[in-house]
Length: 255
Length: 223
Image (cartoon, rainbow over all chains, first blue to last red; front, side, top):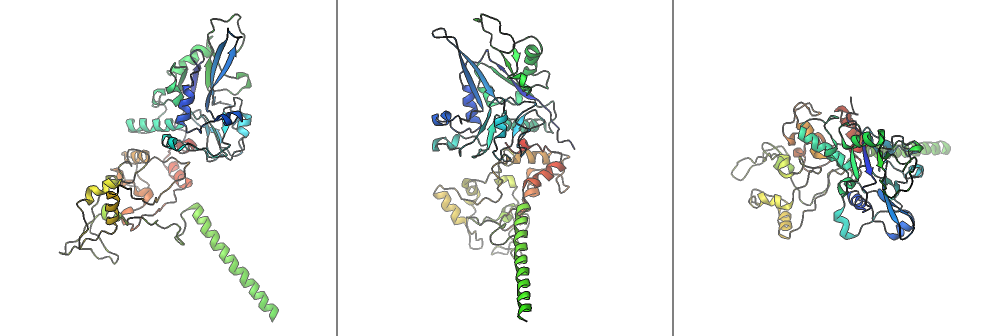
């Protein structure tokens, strides 16, 4: 019996140099994944749910001030700190290289969020509510997370499942490793990014765009780095650092 | 003597209490692991706003009444079931996630012509006509309901079983989509009122997924 019939290693390459901080990925993610509306009050309490958020850093003094942006979302770590602390096995690594959150198993201990290096796990402190006018825009392919459930970026696994079904339907037989390629499946944030700062794909596929970028920038002497790499979480997301024409000094180490 | 009587009464009470507890426990455990017993409104078919006879529409051969006699028209001609394919009404079943209950309009396609006659009583057709005229949906009671956390896709299952070489659990080869339905839904055409026949709990799903080496990763169904 082969239940582990597909093995992928889905991941993302984020070119920080291309990111303009426009927040389309954030909006696309909120819409695709039925994320509750974050009000000002929620932000003040630091309980806002944003599976992907664009961190903004200011550099320099007025008037010579520059904004730096970096999109941060679940890094789908190979050695994820959130996984071993879950007492009910609600978060685990599946055979596609994804860090999966199983909502119906979660009991809301919040250990995972506390142990997460990147602060990308979000707890539903309240029952999510939408105004009546927005009820019909909710995505029927994604579960509603009720109060007391942890949630995080899933790399839009609902789209992966759909892509698998579509490819299987086209091929007329069961899926094998080779048949599902990066073009079959894209998360909403990648689709929405106007500057193609986000690139999604399969790191195990040597022809994929992310593999080429990894080869060029991470294994070689490019701009690639992994966020908080020294912690040892082995993320599946590679960042390409900003090309700064104004840089006065060479920064050693990570971006 | 009084002591002995009291002792017997005590033991009898304990036995009766134990019996009741055991019965309740069996009922609860059976409902938990499988389908509940059909008592006190549990487990049985829900009452529908229109007594829709699946047997007449989807069944094959002559129609039989409760005593097993062939139902006839006034001129002695036997009434035969229509033998419609499941997908004739549940049109989305081999295309998407949900099987889809047909809209009123679809019933009216046929029932504009098929009217109630003297020898052809159609109980509930008046409700359908009034729903059509008032432009209201028929509020069917849902029979099979999975928890919100489960994503079941009819299309994927039907596609798999209609492919040559993939035999149904019954050992048959499905050639059209409608051959696969009874695997989970039972022989709906033989039911006077449709009810759930399989537990459709996660263990039920997983048993079958393991038998067919289908994926058993959590994200297959839960996302």
